Amino acid sequence: LLSALLFVPLTIMVALSIAATNSSRILSRVQRTPFLSNSYACLQSAVHRSLPVLPHVFPPFVCTVGEAPSRMYSSTVAPCMPANVTRLTEPQSQLLDQTDVFIFDCDGVIWRGDSLIHGVPETLAKLRSLGKRLFFVTNNSTKSRKGYKKKFESLGLDDVTPSEIFSSSFAAAAYFDKTGFKDGSGKKVYVIGENGICEELDEIGVPWIGGPSHKGKEPPMGPGDRIEHDRDVGAVVVGFDRNFNYYKIQYAQLCINENEGCQFVATNLDAVTHLTDAQEWAMVGAIKGCTGRDPTVVGKPSPLMIEYLEEKFGLERDRICVVGDRLDTDILFGADNGLRTVMVLSGVTTQEKLLDEGNKIRPDLYADSIVDFFPLGEGES
Figure 1 (cartoon, rainbow, N blue to C red):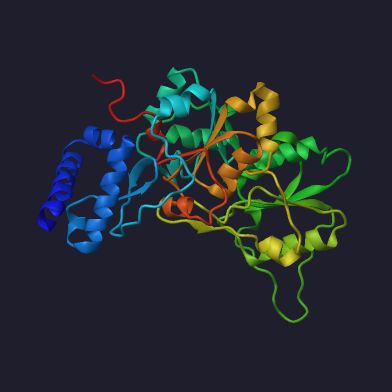
Figure 2 (cartoon, rainbow, N blue to C red):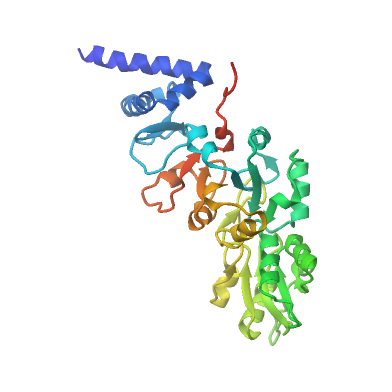
């Protein structure tokens, strides 16, 4: 009797495994059917615990109650447990019918470093063919809008226009413009960042110092040495800077701590960013730490970007969806501003972190990548 009880589920699992190996369409159907998907994942998990050799035979999945499992690219089999996050399984009804405007993060959603994520061009083309409006918002301030236009073109995304691109370097310039920073004050901005911020400040006529010109500078560190800073600096803006150094940290803290009324502005508070496709690079609150000041954040999750888009293009928030790979910026940005949100697992956030019961930031939907907006084989006969 015991042999018979084991034989039936094992036979089902072998059949499903062979189908998944030989036909992605059949696997897709299994993943979309809650009974089959959850049964497969739970049976597989139980068998793996009993017979360790079988992970090499049955592809591992993790599931949540009532939704399809997603493939886990590791040898660890996660237990089947409920999670209050909905996987995107029916894009038309869950997403496309309810959305007119998509706001995409770039790093980890469209590309990683200098590498385009597989399937992105086709997905964007399909969205445009359905009449969807697309915008691309990034917290990476290393480039201006013109610089990002060149990057999109270098990756073959020629249809993206400068008016669809909103980098945090542009957000910083928009903030200074909106607050009247240059109006007769004679103040200038000290930039910790790259050409993106400097070019955007030039566009609106705000004077600045620092930036790339302070690359490689070393502070005098001998007895009695000191750095003399510009007393006319009325704001320090901090963005991504691949040439970050101790001189810049000291200069910035002197301006913030000693210049009366000096503002501290940050393009973002991301803990890490994709500056290359090989690894993540840290750019974490060094200035915040040595000044004891919290910055005014102009990038995500600040509302400044969505307010600008809303005013300029007359968008309706209940028809906008933010798509990102970070919980604490992209998803928070959408949730705090009344927008729909989709988390993709093609960037920083892992499925384990997303589904962890300690995670308090929940997207409306999640998917492996934006390619899942149009399932494999959809529209094919």
